[in-house]
Every structure is written in C-alpha cells, then in structure tokens.
Length: 292
Image 1 (tube, helix red, strand yellow):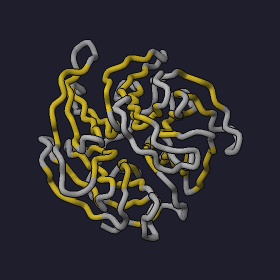
Image 2 (cartoon, rainbow, N blue to C red; image 1 turned 180 degrees about the vertical axis):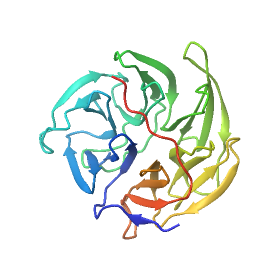
Image 3 (cartoon, helix red, strand yellow; image 1 turned 90 degrees about the horizontal axis):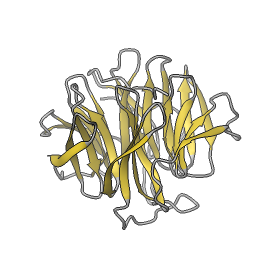
C-alpha cells in the first residue's frame, strides 16, 4: 500500500477520524493539541479549544459535536477558529478527573462515548493512567445519557455488527478487544475477549469494512491489524510511523483508509503525527452523524 500524508500538518495526538459521506468531508481531532480539524475539498480548517478534545462528529441539523473534558458540546461550524462558539449538550461522565476518549455514533445516530482518567497535563504531556475510572455512555438525540459500562481503563474502538446486536470495544489497559452482546432493552451483556493480546502494539481505534473485518490501529506497533469477523488475525498492514491511533474509510467509494497518528516524546520519523491515506482496495462502512 502506498501511504502518504493528507496535509503538511503534524499533530501531537491526532485521533477520532470521521468521514462524512454526505458532504465528502473529513473530520478529526488533536487531543493533546486541543484542536478540532476539518478537511473539505482540499481546504483545511481548525478550531482551538482550551481543554482536550477527543472527537468531532457532524450532526444532522448542520452543526457538529465535540467531546471535551468538561462535557459534550455543539460547535457552530461558522464560528471563528480562535473563538469557537459552543453550546453544552450534556455531561456524559460526571467523574471528576476523567476525560472523554473514543466516541462514535451508531446507525440510529446515538453517540456512544468512552471515558478514561485524564492522562494529559496542561501542556499536553503524558500523565500515567493508574485508575480504572472510565465508563461507556450512550447519548440519544434527545440528549438523554445512559451509562452502559463502568470500571473501564482506556476505552478505544466502538464498532457494531451488521445486525446491531453486538458491540466491539477495546480496553487498551487490558490490551484486548472485547465483544458485548446488546440486549433487547439496550443494555450490554457480559463481555468476552474477541481479539486477544497481540505481539505488536496496543489496540487503539478501529474501522470496519463491508465484510465485517476490523482494521485496528496498534499504538506503538508501527502497523494496523486486520481481524476477521471471528476475531482471528487476518493480516498485518505495515505503516511508515510508530504510533497510529485510529482509522476510517472514506473517499467517494469508501475505499480510501485514513489513519491518524501521534508523535509522543522521543518518537522519530517525518510522518509521526501525520494524517495518512491509502487506497486499500476494500470498501468500508459509512460513518453516522449524530441524530440530534
């Protein structure tokens, strides 16, 4: 695969890529840099915040959601990059000292948000994660919050199967991707290990293709791992950087894979912190906007 940087920008901790097929626009964030980023028809825009931001997801009504450490907000996309206009939607996780991490919308347009102990200092530097204080929350179009899981370490990857009756989600502290049955009442069943500890890297964010294979970014692993629908390792995709963080399918036919990455202290390489893209020859599943 021929990987190349989408822009000349390099980020501290790029994450949460989202492809809006309706508008052919790519969204992502720099958690440590406190940036919401948007690429539309080759034009790059960013919005600067004063706290960590973990996701940037467009809404059906025309604005976007941003998940900040202090809560979930609506962002007016017409507002200035240095003065973003925010409106509080909800506080999903009330635990002091936590921050939002992984966030995705399901096919019904509900936001699923995983939280974790804040691991960033005021300058974006690392703080060790020593608490399992995180949780998984679901926010519907009416802004109602439902807590689904607690006692989580670092929630990463949120993917649903075609029947929407199971969830795949990693806990990076455990180094595995779990599977949860989704009960008829919307609650989650007991977890089971879907993809266990691997020889390279830690599971971070993921994307799913139309055949149900999961493309998982491996933090500090220099690669993506593609897992079959049964959780077995299908193949390893080498990357020209060490710390990929997540990925998403995009482009007109959803065969372009976009990969976000980080540039932690001591990390070498010209592409560290870049947003990469490559045509992978496989069609992915579309992203869903927030329904509210």
